[in-house]
Length: 243
Image 1 (cartoon, rainbow, N blue to C red):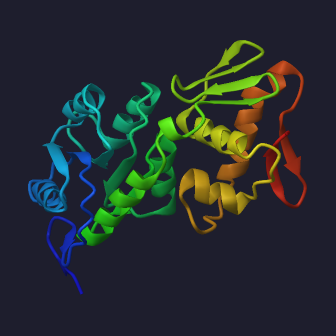
Image 2: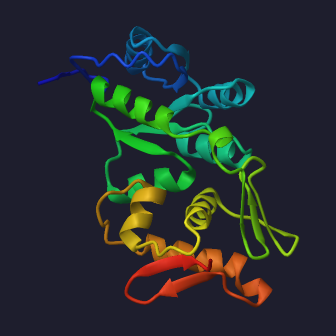
């Protein structure tokens, strides 16, 4: 068992990842921040720690990091706004959100804002270290296609720009991620469960219509203004981008 500290971190055995990552921790708690930073340094990572939301935003945009760890409740700029601003600016650095809010709606809100993972306080350091390593294993853009296409629809992953018939389409971060997922699997049906896991990192059914709502929003931006539908509903199965 791990002993829980008052700051919301459970101490205990630490895994030795040794990945040598560059990590930015944005956490204002006087115990949690230094503890997490010290633990990650013991893992062999280079860690910067800031305690203010606006300072964290400047740091995250000014330097190249492999992973961001962001507390939800921060002075000057809260974690949700911080992540939304980063994603809006095209910063795709994987981000883990730390929070004491554990409800399904809270998790969805964090992931909707652009977080890649969501860890509830109190947490075990070993789990945080494992999640950091998992995010770091995701292939970078240099190992993937950087432009995805379907018909006259084009998604530039580097510039985070979507166009159809040459006309730019403004998407929210989660809409962008959903469309990217469908484009990467063009012609293949993606079930509701598959989309929840891939786009929202939710491995259970939260009993919400979040998938249906976002598909509808995507269609209103990507399909309807152009008079033809690329996003197809496969009745009783799921959704796909026409191949």
